[in-house]
Length: 363
Image (cartoon, rainbow, N blue to C red; front, side):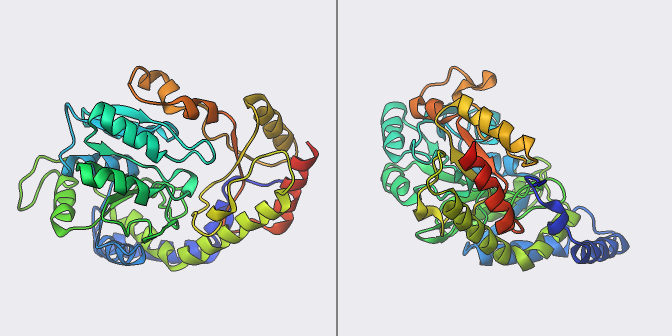
């Protein structure tokens, strides 16, 4: 059975393709390419969906983090806490601002940032900001981190690149008083046809600054900026996908529950059931007991037509461009290289899940 990791064929079905082509034709007719009505519609509706006050579209998810750091005044000479398990973009944004990353260790049970490590690193390194990552779409322990950071005046930026559809105790990701950054790269739950990103913002002042920076600093504040506009076509695609995203995310949760049911008793380690209702299930990760076991399992699945992805091979501190920074990474290093992500989309069938699960159980 051939099972792809990303099911773009069903996501971009004939009905959706026709509707998007009509919208693109409308944009061409109106000569509104860099920004237009769909940018404003999406910002308004996405902020409402995520229970945020404002949404600022930007060019991509990496820019979203970098601009968030900038509007909070984080730059040269400042230290920023970054979890040991994350994608390149989180630490790239810190380095691009001229700030210094400090590694924060993870909870070995799930790969999420560890609040106790956050507290230790704040005390040891006088951090100006911390970037918790909702890795795989799992909700990071934001309340615990706020209890540590807020009294000390340490800023929090939530990296929600994989977390559209994730829920915190306060509500959807973005409903906190922190800046929350999103990527709409084509593989995400809510995805454009190219690069796009956004920052969910609690105050009008910060929203205006983000929009000004992303448009070359043009505007009332005459700030130094950059080109980080989300083009009109990407905004239109995102706006159109908003119609179905809650239904698709609900389907992902049901699929995760089926994986949990069919993989019960297998050799791979599953995430706690407490995440079944709160994660976006952007990815469905299982943990193997070693890198070798993971490699062997990936081969068995590939030989039977099942596409998987090995997130993450290394802790971010082990990657050549990012070595040498201070912090804690013992758990991150032990966690890295043992996770295999199984196929999951809004259209994954129980038959496919059972097929994958049986292969894992029999491997």
